[in-house]
Amino acid sequence: MAQYEILYLSSVVITHFLLQFMFLTDRYPLTFQCPYPSQHHDNSKFLCKGDHRNNCTNVMSQSRFTVQDDGFSHFFLVMIAELETADAGTYWCGSDSQWRVENYTKVELSVGKVNNHLHDSKINRAESSIFVWTPLNMGLWFMRFLFSHLSHSTCVNRPLC
Image (cartoon, rainbow, N blue to C red; front, side, top):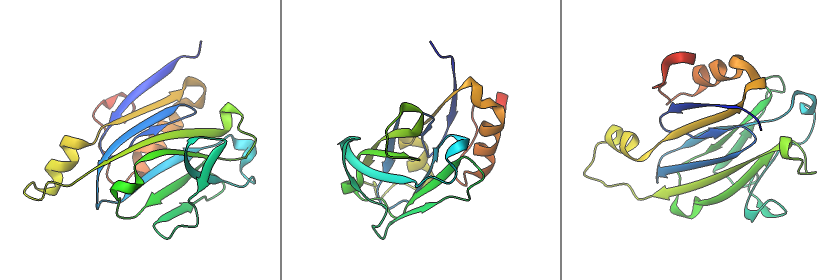
């Protein structure tokens, strides 16, 4: 059985090769990383929405969804502008369409309504939680890179920051 490290952040959920779960409020942007094996840097990347990875709808062409891959980091960024409650659901992202377990990440996204009388920062702290799971063989480099490149994250569990 693989060993895993768990790290806690705020505002995004990232999981490497496993299920990731997010609860965020609407009207806010979301950025998360989809890792892929280093040998797949030239492969096509995908992002789709649906209950099962074999039956999902490509969302990469929708205007609020942006995918960026620099080809060197072994992950690509997925950005969703102005979350909507309709964005809630199961997403699949990865580096090839053969669905080997090491080539995709499953994302469960829940989107709640903003309570207008609360200040934005209170909403983010109260309704967002982050769990980062990564196989130990990915090393600490990936985790340090993740922390340094997420614009709205805070490292709460300090050992790797």
